[in-house]
Length: 593
Image 1: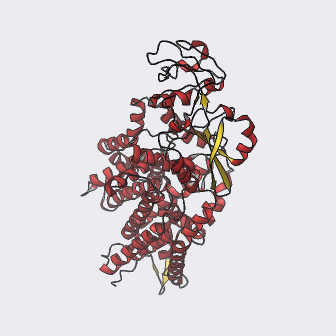
Image 2: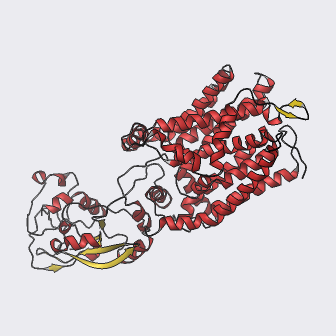
């Protein structure tokens, strides 16, 4: 292997490129190894899984809904990525593996991107070290195995910072004149900012842009701002970032905008969704990937020091190659981004450990740089092989332990088995409801792969079809639900679920097909119902058309009040309903009575 030491200007030998490729392959092995070992159990991952299902299986690429009514919590770039992979691979159904695949690939791409920047500013040895640090980071690798948007945001925030540095560093070194490839780097920077917004919202641009602004002020390089803010790249950034939001506005999908910009952004920042203390991140910063995470604040502090330390070797003052102007500027920007992100999220009321994930690529480069700066020191020369050995051990641990931990964390919370058994009983076109299940329904929705309208009020007033209830709820309400009969008992971990079916109903009238021809708005108030109304002890609201299912779902309050609309085929004369003729309609849903 040709050695280049820490000189970022020397051309690395082929051996170094092979070493970097090996690190990227190892990262891929860690993220992809038994990626679907654990079921989709967590509410947050299951929510994203349902939205991906809506896109992949039902073609709802812009405005997918959770359970037929709730808009997306995050912008759709992660979901679009998953959909694109499935289309390319010819996959037509969403599983745990292909739900998590985008995060895994973004994680591996992030490792490669991090090594590319480190190669430019601290040399090949630092590049390999930064890649090993990321592959050994528990938080980075574990989040790369979860089907959520955080790794997508991490990649594009990192790409924005790194592409800015690739544009800025040559200008700093060679002057303000336009350099070859400068426009391409600016457009890459703008595109990355726009895609970061599509990953998780405005925060994807706010933190990188604010960090760059602070950096230019501290560097005394504000004259670079006009060159960076050229119309073309800025138009690209704005167009990409706003594209989906403009589509929501044009499509009058205001619920999506309210969810995105209201509760998910302002609500989380100002505390409408909950609040944690300002010191919440102290422990995650230090311990989320120990022992590496313990060293990151030290590297950040070293990066912010000025002037850089002068090391003594052989009685003469020498400055490490990693202490030149290029490295100093790059590392300072990464340190500013690290501090700005920690301060921003500490001020925000709502906090999550995953919010720190975008700090890891920058942290890996800073830590590798710090290790290189200590090499002239006798003790520092021992640090690089020691950290390398620690990273190698952590990589092996992540490979072996992460799948087992994910299975353990899922534990008894999976609905996969229960959903499989329920699907065998309930046809795809038959109504299915849920009653009395507390908490988020997303994991159950993901494995049922269908909407599951929740019922309220009395269980006995459930409309025709099937109802899923917890065993304890059925035991408490069984006496009031005489029209429902259990057809399946299934287990979801420690929970027992009962599948109920609406029993027989009784009707007398003509031999015509009974239809309800009213719209949901007509059913909203019983005093404004059109046509003839027959109020009986146990009437039926039914429609053999697909729209009838929606009517039933929106007429629960009316059904609970025992109000039914009954018309003959012509839709003119009311049909009397009594309790004489026994007709079982539950097995045929809302079909012929």
